[in-house]
Length: 255
Image 1 (cartoon, one colour):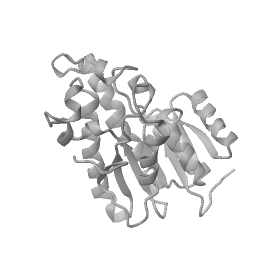
Image 2 (image 1 turned 135 degrees about the vertical axis):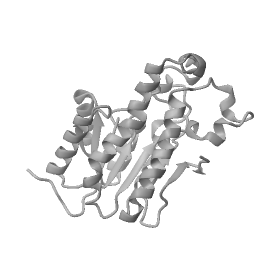
Image 3 (image 1 turned 120 degrees about the vertical axis):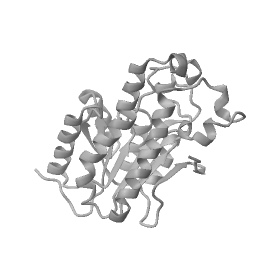
Image 4 (image 1 turned 90 degrees about the vertical axis):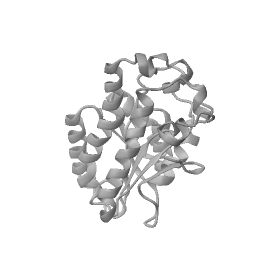
């Protein structure tokens, strides 16, 4: 049965069964949006959606592997059939490539010895996956009166910050996979924003900060809810909001 409405806002978040994505889903649901929990594992996606529904949110699981274009197209078809449109796309799914370790222990990211297959895998998720999902969902976003795309990035994407020899990133190991993938995501964000500006689609990148998640072995000092706050803010921008920007909770982040 179709659940299309002319007013209900629909938000899709990739990688939303845990961490920042799940926290963003909780916050958007609390604002009254219907939230689609994108997850590779159907069971984990449904568990997260059920937990949100138990607290009064309108949430539905959506099986979506961003590295598989076929699942992205299938997911878009399912969203179209059930809701008819999409208002918010949050490209949150991402990997570091190093597994569940602190950034200070990610020795496999050192440029001179990095495994090219690992770099390719990271870009497949963090960059190519964003293209696959965004392009699959664009026809649905174009049906929204106020479409928003948020790409979840990192302060590490900033060439300004990472190239500063006295900056906070000099104490960390070099990163030849994760950091360059997020820098590429910045460029991709600007290119989509430039193309879609005329259509009223606002596209921005967000740096949530050093959040306590599996990806950094829970070494972050911010909670997922704190990290998700800026994501939600960019996902709910008014018509006069920015596009082609890079933001943290403290404001603009230098490229």
